[in-house]
Image (cartoon, rainbow, N blue to C red):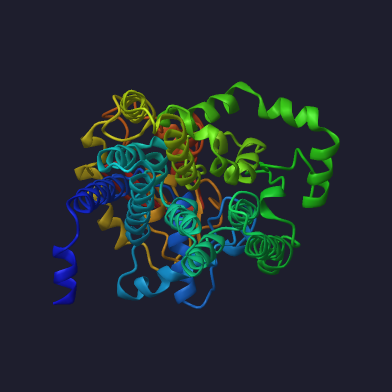
Length: 495
């Protein structure tokens, strides 16, 4: 009865905000499930998470043979103990869709503090709802949700709530969400460290801020210096610094280890700044703030994301400074908190300016969602792109043929449907060792070639090389073609 009473007493604005968030979660759950069922998710990365949790429940703690680095334990590649929360769900039903649903839910819930903060600062429900809608339209979030699952996308909810409760002075709730944020991935304690500095210099809470910053920094160095090397199978060096022949290093150009990278950044600042000022990186920075009419640049909370921006901009991998991928999703709450503060400081006294610039923020949000998202809002996508074809649905027949304990080399976009096994590899890796090889000659993107990530991206290799590999396998003395229907090809290694 108490719960019913509380629901009835929720204000209309809160109901409107909750309705928008529920609609958002339902839409993105549908889209992410549909993308997965349409064979447009990937072994790297959705299959990695699926395999790591499945292996954990079958005696191999966080083991994943399909990681895109040389490591075989996920916690050596990315230290994300938050993922263990998914293990009990796999006891109910083992499916990677748990990851997709909770990612959409987490991003949706991360909008609540944005709405609360805007309502409190701007003293207007209508203005708060505009910022809420802008946040839900923010392409960085949509694109993160629709690129498989990643803990840095799910961590938006922890980042959003932790900063909100920091601002409210509710220390216990801040510490709770900051702890969850730090546990989400190895570099996210740096956000907590910066929030500690924000407490010291902006909120003037020096003692508490110092404790927060030192604890976060200590945990960060403990993770990269002790925990990740402990799980490593490559001699303890951080996986993202290894210059692997298959997957190039993101930061090896800066140095072989953290101390050398720090020295090179400090001793060659001009070279670093030149890299950070390249056109793709400047374009990335523009697209991060353009949806809020660049208001986020002019208030202190934006500085909290500085270490993560540096990590993204210094990477040799272009995915990290591109809003069409997932790496920047966790920055979104701080862009919007900062924008709300700027909006209040600049336009609050003048109702005319408030309305004009609110309209500009709304227009920029709609513009960016239309041109820079991978959703059906974009002219490059349509709802049918997220509806599985009859061909895709026939994959269940193949699942019955491949033994659960068999090793498998599989086409990248088929991988997360078969990743609940001890050994799985992205084809053509292990093509001569795996017990089974599964490929699909159909193109799931053929109905709409305007999609940003097409068949070549899904294959992670040149189509001509892929086709040559297929022809070689058909002639191979090592493998028999045991299934050849509806363009699916299943090979079994000869005994």
